Length: 367
Image 1 (cartoon, rainbow, N blue to C red):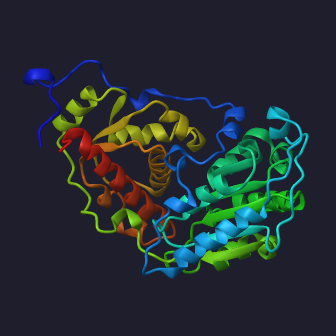
Image 2: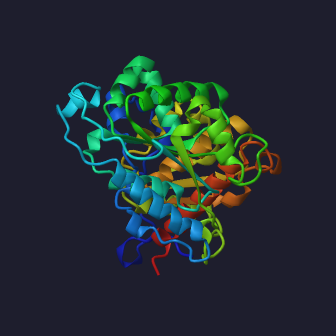
């Protein structure tokens, strides 16, 4: 596969120089953390109507039906106050009380479209964007760290809906913290929706997740209806295997040819991630149009691997293609990691990076 060439075949483009993620150390103010609690760019346009259920998995069709009813049950209501006053809990809008549970939990393996459905619920809920919040578990705990517990309760209590993607059941301390927060929000009338990861040692690809989730959120079980979503990873339905890595030269030439691309060696990038809080990984990728990595190799330890999972999630959310040399992405994690307690996270990262690698192939060879 040829490298990107300058017009009339004059040779690889070498100017302007690509960006570098390793050169970035973003600082993210607390108000940005709040303002960014919306579905990520990848899910801006998703709706229940754009979710394509697998005809062999009736649970997917049933999940859409239940979630549409849940959104409609939240009602529209009037909203008192405006702007920042509502954002920080003042001038709260009256919240209709829907029939049935105040929360839904989407239970299923990776790649069955849980985030698509969660974002569709956010979009379908008839309330102003300022009265709905969407974020991952990590983003929610980061918000508590930035604002403090009481201010976070006050901020989110004025919302009609809080969606939490990838609830981290494998972190007992943060699980208790967020469980307590959710209890306060339920008391304030906020509707909840969540997906989660399985606990360490639970290797059923979501099979045990519902019971674990309902137990770990302690006194909130009665507020949730669990929806099981069966199916294969949609990112691999009928698609080819992960593309083979490119050469260092191809990756470097592409980084110079693509405006807004970054270029980093893999190992130094992993070291840099240890110096940047994961709450800032989204800001780390601001304005990046493609990530180019050279010399991809196995991740050396679990702490590094978990940071890479977060970066993969942020890149996937933002639809940033990833072009790489070295090992293919399905060889990033050791057998011990893939059989351990964080197995589901690592498989999700492989799935998402593989999808982004396919996207990157179009940048090198658009045929």
